[in-house]
Image 1 (cartoon, rainbow, N blue to C red):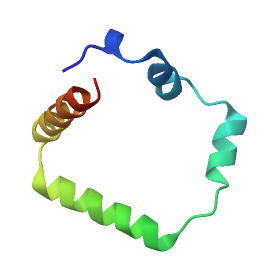
Image 2 (tube, rainbow, N blue to C red):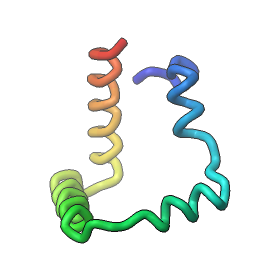
Image 3 (tube, one colour):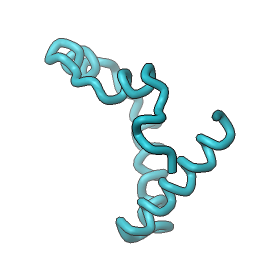
Image 4 (cartoon, helix red, strand yellow):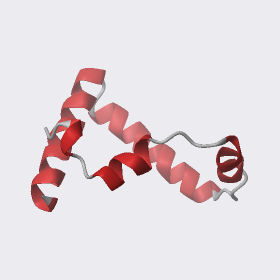
Length: 73
């Protein structure tokens, strides 16, 4: 897996910065699509059935992250 310090600084900044209260409220106020919400829940249920333990889920994420970074880096 790629160490944190090798992440592109722009990526790290975007995903690790804290949101202000105003930003969080703006996100919460966005309109929701019930069909999209249900699709996300279905995918999460599938993922939890396919990888029932935290150990299996983290192994999957590590494996996929390694694949993604090999393709882009």
